[in-house]
Image (cartoon, rainbow, N blue to C red; front, side, top):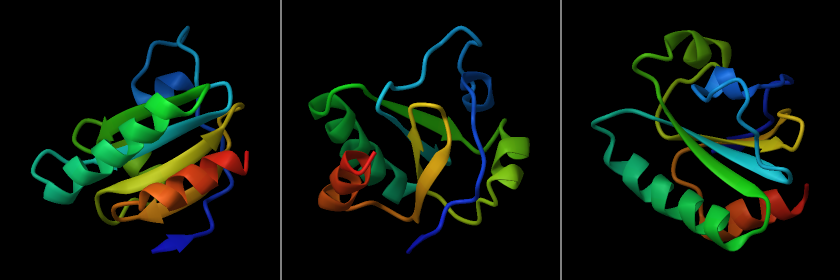
Amino acid sequence: MAHPAPALVLAPPDLGLPSDAALGARATIVQVSSAFCAPCRAARTVAARVSDTMEDVLHVEVDVAGHEDLAARLQIASTPTVLILDGSGQVRRRLDGVPRLAWLRDAVSEL
C-alpha cells in the first residue's frame, strides 16, 4: 500500500554505500529487503528494470539484517518496502510491497 513518505533525507552511508558514492542524480530507488523474502525478488526485478531504462536513476537494495537502525528510522514493518529518493536524498514516495512497473516509473518521472 502506498502512503506518504516520512520527511527525511538519506545519504549514501545510510544505505550502506561509501561516503563518497553518489545517489542517482534524478532518483534513487531504495528497496528494503530481507534474505528469505520471496516478494523481494519480484521487487528487485521491477526496480532494476526502472533503473536500467531511465536516465540518472540508481537502485540500491538494503537488507534489514545489519541495518536495523535504518529500518527503525524508516519505520519498516514489512519487506519489501520501496522508497523513492530525489537527487538530494529526500524520501519522496514509499510503497510497502512489490511495486507495479507503471507505478514505479510514474513515481520516478514525477521528480
